[in-house]
Amino acid sequence: MKEKKHRKRRILPVVLGTAGGVAAAALIVVFGFRARSFEVEGNEYYSDNSVVTWIQNDDLAKNSLYILIKYNLMDPDVPAAVDHMEISLKNPWTVHVQVKEKNMIGYVDYDGAYLYFDHEGTALVRTKKVMEGVPYVEGLVFDTSAVKLGDNLPVEDDSIFEKIVEVSKGLDKYSLKPDRLSCSDGGIQLGFGTVQVLLGSENYDERLAQIDPILEKLHEKYPDTPGTLHLENYDGASENIPFVPDKAS
Image 1 (tube, rainbow, N blue to C red):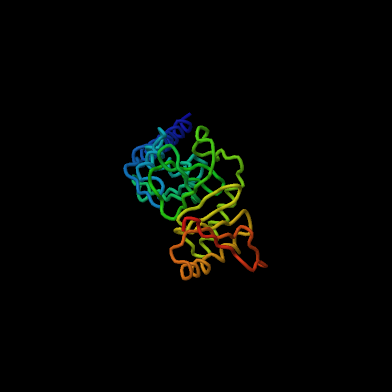
Image 2 (cartoon, rainbow, N blue to C red):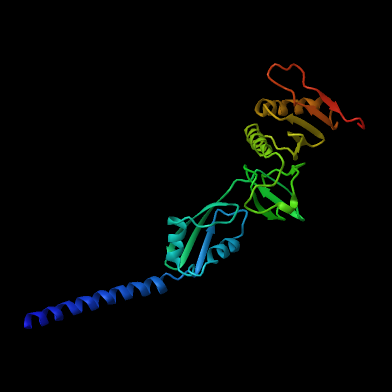
């Protein structure tokens, strides 16, 4: 009996010590990892405040350790224009947010502002801000009443987005900066000042390669002459590329 009592006396401090340690650890997690400040990087489409508000729209997001686990080990919802967010802790109370946003390929007029979309035609952001490097797209017809951020734009032929992506890649490749990009009849047109360039619906790379040298010749031969450059039927075997001045000119 005495030996059992001695065992109980030895075990009790261990149990109490363990319980105390667990309680102390719990208090540290709850109160020591309280998110008091946020540092946000990599965001262009959303403000710092918008990103922080999104993260904190969760009753448990007052805890920085919870935020760390949620965004690094789980699959949380993120804003429509964000690909993912990487979270790290500068210290237990300071959360560092690295934002990786999706690539916008164009924007259109929508509801008194601009609506930006990605390569799949997904509506990502509605804003009055014009974002540098993203082309304005004319002639893209869609049902404005059916637009929903995070969903594809309700166009009749969504293959137009693949064409816009292909043209955008070619514009980067050949360092071309059109004033506007237009869609009509399943094809793409570009505007360079007073010159409209018809690209058609295919063979964009080889057609885009012709634009810069032709524009240089046009400026020399027909300075300040508005008109249309017809590349919609061009292929490697073409000998002539028609330029048709506007009638008014």
